[in-house]
Structures are given as structure tokens and as C-alpha cells.
Image (cartoon, rainbow, N blue to C red; front, top):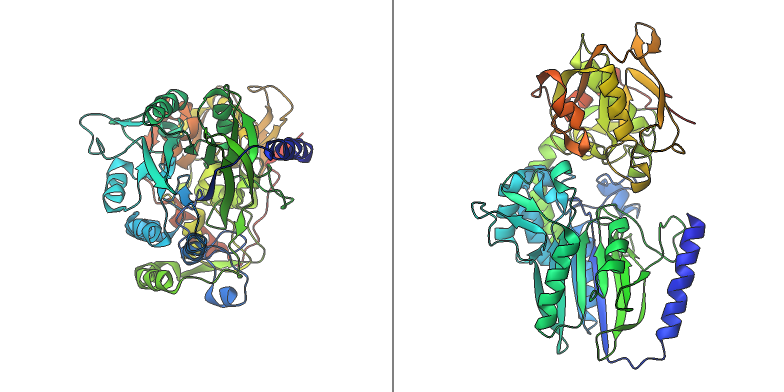
Amino acid sequence: MRQKIAGLLSACTMLTIGAGSALADYDLRILHTNDVHDRVESVTKYNNTCKAEDDAEGKCFGGYARLATAIRNAKAEGGNVLALDGGDQFQGSLYYSTYKGTLTAELMAMAGYDAMTIGNHEFDDGPEVLETFIKASKVPVLSANVRPTASSNLKGKIIPDTIVELGGEKIGLIGITTEETPDISSPGDQVAITDSEMALRYSVARLRLKGVNKIIVMSHSGSYKDFELARTVSGIDVIVGGHDNQLFSNTNEKASYPYPVVETAPDGKPVLVVQAYAYSRYLGELNVTFDDAGVATGWSGEPISLDASITPAEDVLAVIAAASEKVDTIRNIEVGSFAAAADGSRETCRHMECSMGSLVADAMLWKAGEGYQIAIQNGGGIRASIDEGTVTMGEVLTVLPFQNALATFKLSGKDIVASLEHGVSKVDEDKGQFPQVAGMTFELDLSQPVGSRVSNVKVVDGDIYTPIDMNKLYGVVSNDFMRNGGDGYALFRENATDVYDFGPNLEQAVADYVGMNSPMTPMARNRIMLK
């Protein structure tokens, strides 16, 4: 990966230097976030809500008050400045569970955003909640490939693109939403998510006809898709990305890609692709110079770490403090304690067994009770880690923010193995379908072709693990999202029998399990053995 980054960085540097001799006539400063996931307050290094005393000691990052300060300061410096968001403002803290996006709409306006696109999580509570958010938002909400039907309440409320004027120039803005949304969220049958490439082509053509020669796409599609779109669709200058929570940076050794990644469009023009991790921890800052024809001739930038050096905006803190009164009654409840941190990071739980994943799966199996041998939880449903010490309900809800119910069913050994194969099929794409399990073990060889990566699957039988019987029906517990085919678990939907999708909420099951076993030491249990 570091070799890949170095190569891309070298290409980026050469392009920038080579373009430096062109006559430049318009400078644009693009500030951007993505995948904020309702981290209204500042967060710890584990992306959980930061305690006030830790914030005072400079140990915390992000939060809307710091975002507001950084955006406001940049705009106060003058010049042509846009603040954009790449989607997934929703879902991830009790603020979303409590206010369902209305607080987010208020905070985005206070911070000074100019536009956002729709992420998949904006549909987590169905199109009705998104409709309410759009009505409350003073910030344009864009997506060119979200197409409500004539009978949908969203009809006419989502615009594909818009034009803003800065410094006497027209800037075209287009939104794109991941085509995976129907599989990983709940847009319903009245909202179609169409082909993003075709939708982009239409919007670019429409903006060009209006005399726009500088176009920015806010794409909640994942970096892998953004690179592809940059290479296949002419007329785009910048892609502000999101969805796979990647840090693009030229200075941070943990970065996945340089900032920006420079692709070449079919018309030969450079396309600058950026992303700024997630959870409000960074504010991306891309400075671009365009010539008279709207071609990017120079660029520079780097994500700004929203650490203790950024003073939170007092007016935003006041709004958050008022909103926190409802939230505090739930999140401050102590449910137990950890003797070690539980790793629920995206980087681990979507690629291998993680300690938080094993804990969640254990809690599911315990709550399901007799008659169930196997628990399977999607790694993408685990959204944070928890440090050692006291565990609160707020922390549990940050890890498991989706309010999923436990779902129980019977499934054959053959379909269970096939489902595991599906779960590990897109590890290289950082997909959330990766299975965290309890009551079973398996070996995983990622060097093998998709469909033949899983082997030696065993199921617990008393005190020992025995090879899975392909013809036997096993009792399985999962969450209702997966049971209904979410994250591509089609066999859970199509072949399951004795289905019950209305068990207790997953976060409550985990809280009860932690309380019963505290103090506990979360750890990976060697259930998924990498070969």
C-alpha cells in the first residue's frame, strides 16, 4: 500500500509542477467533510464522544463547534471558498437517535456549509426522515442518481445539481449516492438509485449548456468508485468523496492515498479526487487554480486535523449543550466495565475478527438462548471502539447506533458456508458485510479466489467444535437488517425458515451482556483464522 501511495504521490507532484507554467486566472478553496456520522460533540481517538475533562486536556478531536470555527475562519480570510459535504451526516450517535437529523440541519447551517450530497445512511430510517431533514435544511441537498417516483414524498425535493457564483465565476456542484444503498440502507420501493456514471454525464452536460466550466462532484460512492468515475466521465474537475472513510494525506503515514489523487479524464483534463476520513476529525482543504477554460492548472492542500488547536465556536457549543439534555438521560447510564479496550475500528472489523465483533456476537448468541448455535454480525454494523474502564449506554449506542433488532432463524450448513463466503468476498473493498461470529470458527485465505476463501468451518457442540454439516439446519441469530438481505446476505432472506425478526434491540442485548459479565476483558477469540 505504501508503494502505491508513493507512486500516486509522485504522479501528483509531477502533474502539479508541470502545470505550474500555465496562465492561471481563478483560485478556489474547497473545504470538505464526509461521513461525519452525527459526531456532534468532539470525539476520542476511538471516535466515541469525548468527556469534558479529556477535551479540556486537549485529548479530543472534531465536533461541530470545531468544524464551525475552521469553516468560518477560512471564509473570513476572503477569496473564493466553498464548504461541501460528501454524505452520511446521519447515524452514529444519540444525537441522531434523538433528533433524527433536525439538529444536524441546524448545525450545518451554523457551520457555513454550501452543499451536501446524500449518503446511504441518510436513508436508514426511510425516506420520510430524509424528507424532514431536507425541509429543515438551509443547505442544498444534492444527488443526481437518487430518483424518487411520482408518488414519493421526496419527489421534487432532491435536486441533482446546482450552480453557485463565487468571484464572478460559476461553479457547478453535483451530488452522487452509492448504488449499493438499496442493499445497505432503507430507501424503500418509492426511491430508485440509478447508475451513477450515467447520472453524472447528464448533470455535466446540463451544467455545460449553462456555461459552467468548473464542476465539483460530491460523491458518496467510495474512493474506488470515484477513481473510476474520474477516468470515465469528462467534464469533472474535482471529486469530494466519501463512504469508505479514507484519509487522503501527503503527511500522515496512515493515509491510504495522497492528497489529492490525480486522475486523467477521457478529455485529457486532470481530475482531483479527495476525501477526509470521517467522524468530523478532519476538514479537507483543497486549493485549486483554474485557467480561463476551466482546466485545473495547479493544486495544493491537506486535511486539517481538528484537534485542540482549533477553538470551538461558542454559539455552536451552546446549541449542542441545549440539545444534550435529552441525550444525557440515556448515555450516562453505566452498564458495566472493561479491563481492556474493545477494538471496533473499521480497519479491523471489516477485514478480520475484532474484539468488539466477538463481544457483540457473543451477546447475540447469549440473548437468543437455547436452540441457537451460531451468531453472525456484519462488521459494518460496528461503528466504534470502547476504551477500558466504565462502559456507558452512550458508548454502546455509539458502537451500535442502528437500533437493529435481533433476528433468529434456521439455515442449512450449506447456506451458512455460502453466506460466510459472501461475507469475505469484498475485504479488499472495505465492505461492511465482513462476518463477525460466535458459536463457530473458520479459516480464511484471502489469497484464494472469491467463493473459495472459507474452509474448515466448525460449529460448537457442547465443549468442542465439530465440522459443519452441510445438510443440517442450524439455529442462527443475526440482526434484522442482515436477515432481510442487508449487506447482500440474500440467503438469510431467501432460504431462512422459522424466522423471527422482532427480538430485543441489539444494543440492549450487548449492554445486558456487558453488565452481566463485568468486569470483562474483550478480546478476539481465534474464531476467524487467517491463513
